[in-house]
Image (cartoon, rainbow, N blue to C red; front, top):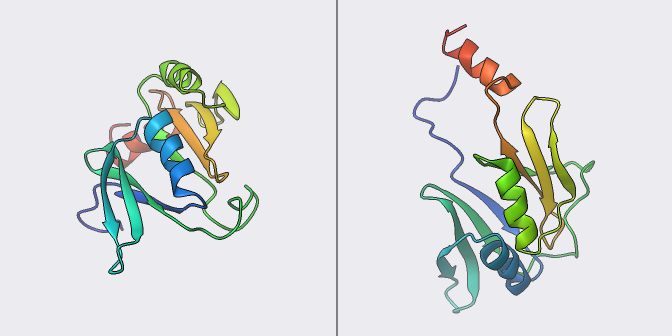
Length: 147
């Protein structure tokens, strides 16, 4: 049974080693607008909100410990995914912004188009274009009784 009233993921929160470097990546290269920031009582930065959509955000928390996020095989959040409407256009935009694709556009095992990047802290980010014949689309159809 699903919880009542859920609408989606509101934000992904990342602890980052260098807030300036992360803002240069997420805000300046990926184009996620800085919506607001919150400061601690002492005036130091606590977090920065970046907009993906009107209701979905990335929160960046400064002063993370260590140089890099855990590898893909470590127990932790493995990656987060941002859905896009045209993966080829998104990949082209990423390259134009100077972002290196760690995985070039390809068809995933779930039958969706995907490409991958890593942020300055090594957090893996998937961009996905959901296909009409994907496993997710078929599952949605089953859930809603349309199959």
